[in-house]
Image (tube, rainbow, N blue to C red):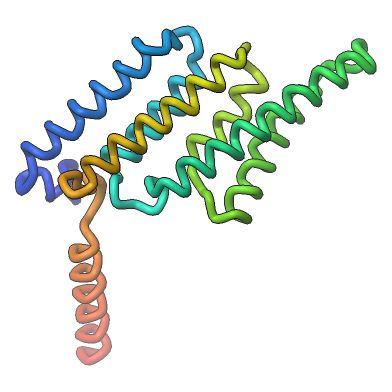
Length: 191
């Protein structure tokens, strides 16, 4: 088992270029929108940046998944945030621990809606809990929408140039499966 991905030797310059591009894009987002203090939002956008630049041809990096996932993450995050505010208003003394339940509810509901609507994007599920636990404004939501549009647009224009930088290629997986099958067949025949 190798520590270094086998594709690195074949595509070293591509790895370096795509990683530096990802670095530039997330720095631009942070600088343009001054979201340094919004750590959960930066974390979710950072994870989406990873998916867009390192897993550019994966299911999770498709625009439907990114836009749909973030729409659900934002919607559930806002709904659960306002539910928390309502519960605090109804019974301020009974509030202890409810935000833990609501956080789990936000993640679970986001996951359910994403898989139900075929818009699975893991970082966006995390955003739903981030909007519950971290302070935000309308501008925060605007920043998220603009940032994911920027990431998706960048990916669109680079789609023919970007390669997947993660794990084995589909051919390597197929070759490995074929090799395992051959080994199994040889073991059966030798007994």
